[in-house]
Amino acid sequence: MSTSKPLTLKSNFSWTFVGNAIYAACQWGMLVVLAKFGSPEMVGTFTLGLAITAPIFMFSNLQLRHIQATDAKQQYLFSDYLGLRLISTALAFGLVVAIAMVASYSGEVSLTIILVGLAKSFESISDVFYGLIQQHERMDRIAISLMIKGPLSLIMMGLGIYLSGEILWGMIGLVISWGIVAIAFDLRSGKFILRNSSSARLRENSSFRGNDQIQPTWNLNTIKQLTWLALPLGFVMLLISLNTNIPRYFIEEYLGARELGFFAALAYLMVSGSMVVNALGQSASPRLAKYYAAGNVKAFRQLLMQLVIIAVGLGGLAIIVAIVAGAEVLTLFYQPEYAQYADLFVWLMVAAGISYISYFLGYGMTAARYFQIQMPLFTLATAASAATSFWLIPRLGLKGAAIALITGAVVESVFSLGVIFHAIYRIKR
Image (cartoon, rainbow, N blue to C red):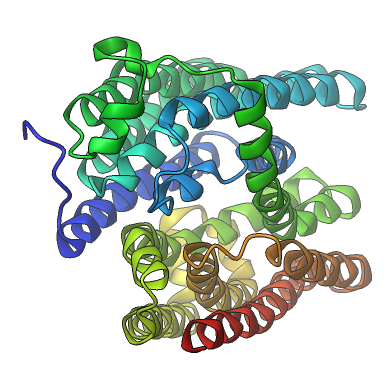
């Protein structure tokens, strides 16, 4: 296409679903490669790298993508978002390196953590371009990026591990593949959107033209204002990531890398439903924001309700599959030794179903621009997950970790629903 004209909600969902499906399948394929050609310990090392770096980058990203996507009044330019993202990404990577050097991990584990952090740095750069693309409702370009990045990263990582038998070469392949996509495709997509944007305000107010539009701005006052706006969501994303990863920290501490590998492999199957949730949520976010900004209570509530019903259906289906064919699924996808955790698989699918509901409610809160309330909300959810992990993992093992995920998801869903009711009540007034 030669213009950046927004696509329909149906088209955006279709593109996003396909892109996320392929990308999620390839991400899961990385764990399969580690499980098939490596060992549970190798899966555990990779998972530990993700568990350490994810909260840092989730915080440093400040959820700028969703702020961009729901910036219906275009309060900030893309160059402002890009400038802040470059600063925060550099600080995040520096912190990852410091943690890897100071912590008492082996050399291989420390290098794995640093390489995962470098890969996530490229991912953060791609993410800020995704925010621009999502704001203009052109999810096809994000989907194409994911459809390139997923298979490329799987191939590069798989070759590195298969040829060397070491996780480090796999991580190097991951860094190279994510870097290539960020620079060669996502950067060009950003130029395409800016050059062909139908937004008169963006064209008139941007001081950059052509290729120079991609250059960041470093206005201190603007960066401060945007940081202050986004900071609550940065803390929220930190808490969300901790809510997911805290059980993994306790597993590594009390049960070791091998058990962490088993848990991570099973938990990643939650992604099969979350890719649908994220595809719908990302596609619907700009529409929800417009409905709320216009005071259209009925449309906002109806669309959000439809999303929640889909979440309930996905969660129910996941639980049924786990109960009926859990052992067979784990044996097919991984190794026979994973089938002994079929009961754990059911608990994790329960956690997944509740999480899907909370994800959609989170998209609703962000669309309504309820940023600051999310921080105490997710603090409660994270505290509940941490307390449950501390109490149950030493006693129940991996089952305790699954219960911790369920506890955090329940707390998050209940309080998110309360915020949504308050937001709708304010529109009615």
